Length: 214
Ligand code: ADP
Ligand code: ADP
Ligand code: ZN
Image (cartoon, rainbow, N blue to C red):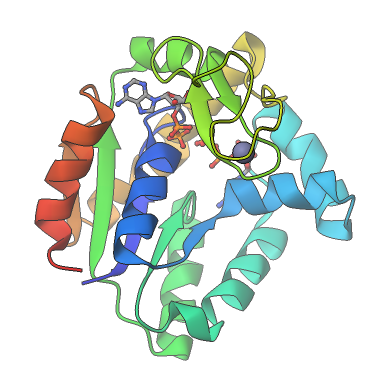
């Protein structure tokens, strides 16, 4: 049961849990947000197109998003499992994803849903810092690096995501509530919900129990 999605509002801890899950189970982490940020940093065609949507906290158009996910899932390293993070993000994407899975002969096993109340999400997002080199996520209060502003893993200077500001966050939370949250019901047969307002390792332990052996 290792063909999985991870869902939840912005700041719920999807990326943080995903880092632990993919390391433990040795499966690829497919994050559409990470892929877009890499594309923007590299100034690719996808990056140039996605940038204005991301900066405003809106969804990038499906033509772009669905294409990059399909290409990634077709890669042989996804054969024994994968963790998709940040996709699908609305009903339309979920329907296109269902077609894609059928074409690729993939059966989804589990949808991990992380729940955190709205008022807690804002602080998590505003205090988030990421490593531009290795992608690791930190928080200025809740998940501090050993040395302020420096990545524990690779020593690079941490940065704040451009969309992690108060103005954009409220739109992202609205977009989540109106478009993404309905997917919990769409996937109801596969969803397991975890309380994301606990220590990172406590949540990860619960998730491991549901996913099972390596
Ligand atoms: P968060 O971790 O805060 O939930 P992500 O890193 O997943 O945010 O996504 C950042 C931004 O990238 C989103 O606000 C959106 O603009 C864009 N994005 C990511 N995934 C998708 C997707 N599946 N469809 C459309 N836009 C996406
Ligand atoms: P998402 O990918 O869902 O947007 P992240 O994994 O990037 O969320 O986490 C958002 C912020 O909250 C980061 O700064 C992260 O270090 C922090 N964080 C993640 N999980 C927890 C937790 N269980 N308790 C407190 N802070 C957390
Ligand atoms: Zn790093």
